[in-house]
Image 1 (tube, helix red, strand yellow):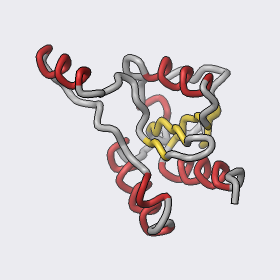
Image 2 (cartoon, helix red, strand yellow):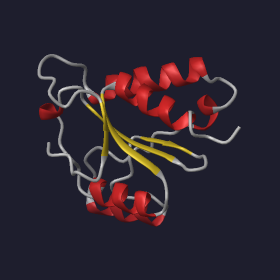
Image 3 (tube, rainbow, N blue to C red):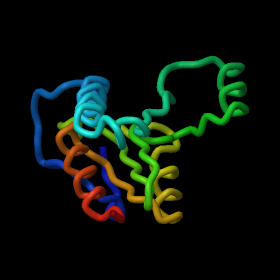
Image 4 (tube, rainbow, N blue to C red):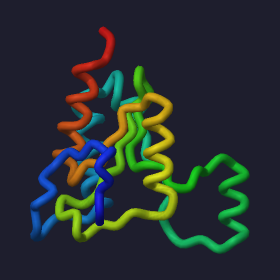
Length: 136
């Protein structure tokens, strides 16, 4: 997986080795957010379910209902909005899905805090960086 220069990266891009699946990284990250911020971020952080195989009729229906191809794994409303694509800690075990880079680029152009995190701990670091710049 090649990470474009314009995209902020959290985590060690040189790490190679055993690491949890992206799904397990998401479960761990959202569990941490809900424990640490139960009355705030834990209530509003979302993971849009865009992955998985679908047939053409399902795709048409989902797009009509508002599904956006390439939507990232973590979205938290704020000023600016937190947009994070979560990948495996070993980036060579991940790949970009259609529309992901285009979504991230468009969100960044609109002023969102946009990043890719390599593993849940990197996503935690990104979130902490983002929260340190939030208005009080």
